Image (cartoon, rainbow, N blue to C red; front, side, top):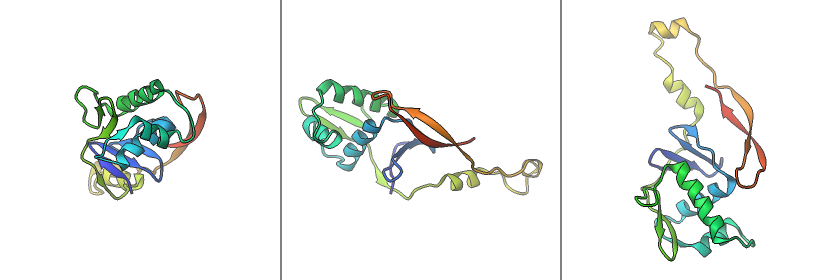
Length: 155
């Protein structure tokens, strides 16, 4: 089940962060970082706990954690000085502080159907009802350089 916070929805099963129904691009490790923080909310996690869960059996520097946190905050539109989502616990680690709730997944089909005009309007008679189509796309992870294939809804 997705977790909703602010305008965002974090779908762990589909590994998708969306804002207002639109996918938000996130590197794989940034998604893992967010998932760890959200799953342990509102508890603060030490940097060591985060490293152990995001990079198991791997040695990473503190600058790697900080860089990934910067990417995550940029994707969320968060500010370290006035955090809405991720709070820095100085000398310790980080905590997810936004109000969050488990929700039912919203399918793209349901969003598209609810956005269609009323059948009695002239606009709906003038144009055919749209279908949800997808197209394959390649996404490059900015940190690792690896490419992965994903499906993006057409507008």
